[in-house]
Image (cartoon, rainbow, N blue to C red; front, side):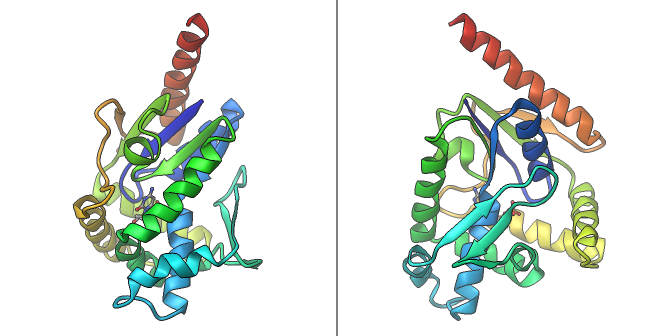
Length: 226
Ligand code: DC
């Protein structure tokens, strides 16, 4: 079974996808962590903003590894070096939209995500997992929430990592990233026609998890009936 959870920055995808995967015994793939890791490679090589087109070739030569954790953010490694926290710093967050709009970068990571999906049951979360990566996913969810709520959640998440950023600054970053991610030519952020949209503003994490797990269970029962 393939479950695709998409939505804008801070809509709750990571938390929901991880928890849903855990409670249903599926693997979990954070595709945003993959784009962030490749962005870090581009930044370190001085390819942002003028030579982004060279990123994919460089990233393809690196050994990228992602390890999901049941209670925390996905761990990321470049050639054995752990970059879990670095990829979530502001410098990477600011550069990730232009880097992830690059055709070569998308081709590289989409192939990798499909490879992961072909290994069996998985919950993927990102921007295009239900539209481009797995257009035939069994369950598609599109999470949204108000900008204010998303900024507050991002702040709480960053504080847990020891990063203190104001809600105003985070809201501005989120609005800019939404515009970039939805406006790009390749694989823009959008709801798949057959995705179920859930507005998580004002909902607790538990409520969203229950709704998503309910949709997946219903699909499983349907599938078992043939
Ligand atoms: O979910 P996140 O904030 O960690 O994602 C970081 C960026 O990566 C996001 O702004 C756009 C890009 N991204 C993408 O283009 N496609 C995906 N499937 C996932 C993320």
